[in-house]
Length: 190
Ligand SMILES: Cc1cc2nc3c(=O)[nH]c(=O)nc-3n(C[C@H](O)[C@H](O)[C@H](O)COP(=O)(O)O)c2cc1C
Image (tube, rainbow, N blue to C red):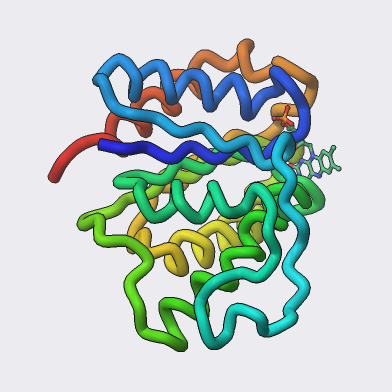
C-alpha cells in the first residue's frame, strides 16, 4: 500500500509534525510505503485561475506540484496533518490544495479518472491553539473538498484543540494515542 502523507505546517518539529511522526510510526511498522510531502518546504505557486487546465486537466505552472500530482495518482491512502491558521489551513497547504483545480477540471469537466487505485481512504488530523470546536470546521471543509476532488471518497477526521506552544502536544498522550489508532484504521483493508 502506498501512503501519501501531506504536512501543512511551516513550523519544524511543531505539534502537527509530532502527530505526523506518530502516525508514520504505525504505518511504517506495518511495512507500508510512505511518501511525505511537506507543503512548506516545496516550491508551490498559488493557483492563478488562468483556465490553463480547463481543456487538459493539466496545470500549466511548472514547479514542485508536478511531484505532488504524481503522488496523488499513486496513493492508496492520503493522510493530511496540519495546524489551523485563522480557522483555515496554512497558506502553503492551501496553495497545494488550490493547485488541484487542475484535477477538479480533469474529474468534473473532462470526466477522466484521477487514479486507477480503488477504495481510497483519507485521514485528516488537525491541531489548533483554540479551545472552540468551531475553529476546526473550515479546515475540515477545505480538506474534504480536496479529498473528494482527488478521488478519496471517504476520510476520518480527528482534531486536537487548545494545543499551541511548539511541542506541547507531547504533554497530551491521549492525542498521540488517538493519532496512532486513526493511523491503524487508515491502513486497514476492509
Ligand atoms: C498564523 C497563525 C494563525 C493561527 N490561527 C489559529 C486558529 O484560527 N485557530 C486555532 O485553533 N489555532 C490557531 N493558531 C495556532 C496553531 O494552530 C497552533 O499553534 C498549532 O499547535 C501549531 O501547530 P504546528 O506546531 O504544527 O505548526 C494559529 C497560529 C498561527 C501561527
